[in-house]
Image (cartoon, rainbow, N blue to C red; front, side):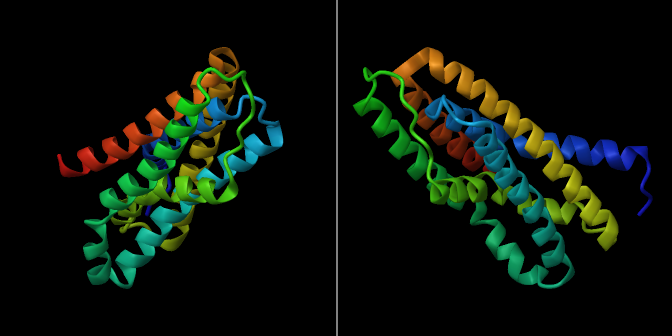
Length: 194
């Protein structure tokens, strides 16, 4: 694989495309936790970047080893994403409705929920392993590193925007954040069929 300018542009654009779901979830997390500290924001963005980089690498490994088993799993990806984001978003939506008139407070998303969000927003990136299957190992590692770096930057931006907006919309932030997560789950599910 030739590591030229086109390689970098293609993988940076692929990173942007893959990071859009994680951006929206980061926005929702920033909305629900408007007093989030910078180190927590970096941790959340780093977690999403890790998953967005890890999933294509797992897909690449599967293509080169157990592709016949992976093809069955690919049909389950939209269902898994819909289920995970629907549960997390539904919980956030219900909490937001209960507290819609409450004053602005920080509701931190727990680590377990962040892990589920990371998996749900990046599970469709497994199929990217097929698109980078012709890369050698070094090129594949560089591609997923680019994807992870782009995801980190985009998620950090989503958290910053969400945090700023979250302080302005007060108790309604949980409703908006939950609705965003449910919408993302539906969007992943619907676009996988069309």
